[in-house]
Image 1: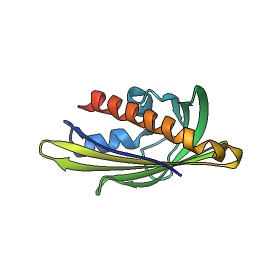
Image 2: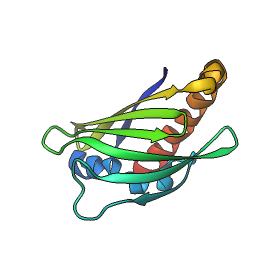
Image 3: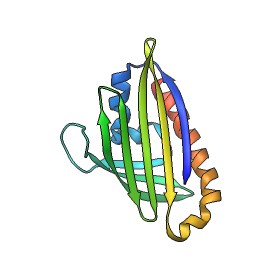
Length: 143
């Protein structure tokens, strides 16, 4: 298992920030590791929403399908699970009001399957670098 986690302070309200982040269609706006995203369903954002996410990882484009498995606007908590060829991911988002802004707590786990598991030590470093760039982009976008 590969894990990345960070906290980011932002100026926007906690509720606006939460809705923005839980809608993975916004990922390419701040995460340079994401090539493109397409929502696979329609309607208001809710549990069960699905996204086709094409990530850039290690010089390759990696398509994944993400599903919003937890979405609670009252507690500002969301969890999205992604599945791709030989990779599974879980992204957890928690937003907390802080003064006139908010604090984002983002945690992501990546599990490699099959022979790809043998690359875990190298992929751990790549994922950490990718996560740092994403959080830097998030700070720039929402700070």
